[in-house]
Amino acid sequence: MYCSLDNLPDVAGLFDEAGKLLGSASSPIQIWKEGDCVEKMKKFIVLLKRHYHKFITTGLHAIYSFLKILQVQQSSTDIWLAICTAVKRALSLSDVAGEEVTGVGFAATCSLVAVDSEGQPVTVSWSGDTRRNVIVWMDHRAVKQAERINSCNSPVLQYCGGSISPEMQPPKLLWVKENLQESWSMAWRWMDLSDWLSYRATGDDTRSMCTTVCKWTYLGHAHMQHIDENNSRDMEANGWDDDFWEEIGLGDLVDGHHSKIGRSVAFPGHALGSGLTPDAAKARNFELGLVAGTPVGTSLIDAHAGGVGVMESVPDSEANESDDDAICRRMVLVCGTSTCHMAVSRSKLFIPGVWGPFWSAMVPEYWLTEGGQSATGALLDYIVDNHGASAHLANRAASKSCSIILPRESESVLLGAAILGAVAAKKYPGLRGAMKALNAAGLVIHPSKDPRVKKYHDAKYHIFRQLYEQQLSYRSIMAEALS
Image 1 (tube, rainbow, N blue to C red):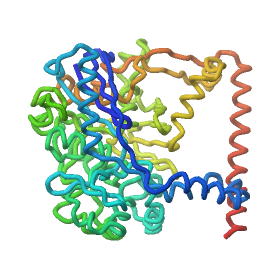
Image 2 (image 1 turned 90 degrees about the vertical axis):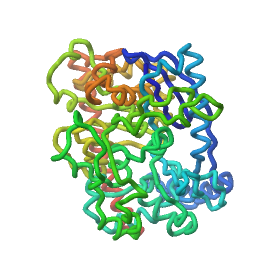
Image 3 (image 1 turned 30 degrees about the horizontal axis):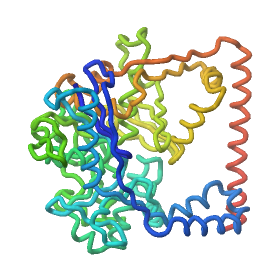
Image 4 (image 1 turned 120 degrees about the vertical axis):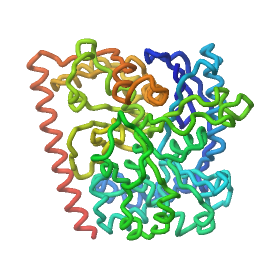
């Protein structure tokens, strides 16, 4: 039996050895939005009315102007307490004893956590409130820092679609250094939230290949010739590009063999330390209520945990195929707060504007390519769930000669995190084997065999491509006129 934990809000799930959800529970977490967001939104509306012509021609730039001034924070202490509450509720609802849990996995948003040498919170807020030590993934305070980093044209940027986002960690780190110097000097560790959760649970500071490669510019492929998943171990972090950190003004993070940002990395699911520490495991109010020593797997970002929880959800007719490259012919769509499309390949693919290629960031020894749109997942969920013609639309969407497979378990992120626990418990030799065993297909929507349907959708796609090319052309014309 495996326990999985996801953040935003904090949710705990319990899965059996067949990958079936036995029960789950959630607990709310606090979030702070710096300043008076209502007043800022009013200013945004005024800005939009004043510059509506620019808004029309430049897409969502006005919205991002609002996001630039929005700072969003959470508390790692509050998140941990919420996780402990959720775990104990899930155990109770599932009628499962803590002793029956054989592995634990964490998934979380790609938020940035700051702690001092004692593991205590370091503020990342103008307010100075030490509770606020997490810069939430959606925080856009570091737009200017991201623009400066991109102007450097560092070679590492080719592995994140050619440019860095303000939602990634280097711009946020640079913002803190430039604006909160006391916090910068106090911080002993800067961690992705899912890495911090596994560190809080085990005391092991090994970072995940998922978080470091996708959000920190770590070059995971530095390990390609030296390691394979079946011999998983802590790997010395030799994928940091020191020249990049020096060039962007964060050379001090290179000190101490990168101790503040990660001296060692591991594949997702690698067993950390000696499992749950006694302090993290014991059943008092603010801990998990599990057994000390329970294996804990190296973490994943939440969207990537969703990929792990669904990518091997194939019909029975395909479940036993021996083609290791079959996974490369699938694409996963994970919808949470945002929407993320993910695909893996044996060789690296460079696509401008598409994140990656990231080596071993989701499935070990495969290159990951991903694209998405912030804050659109919830909207897509609503449309699909509530539109009267959703089933008909799904069939039409399948008319492009590709089947749509819905997983048996709708909580794919929780299942992905549980799979990490199964790998850490040595139930499977590696992540891919655990995915094949615990993923399962639900509803399968096959392509329409009606040639008229295909002709119809081919025409619509052709129109879409033409409209897209026209949009790019018009945007370029207006950008030149307004420059």
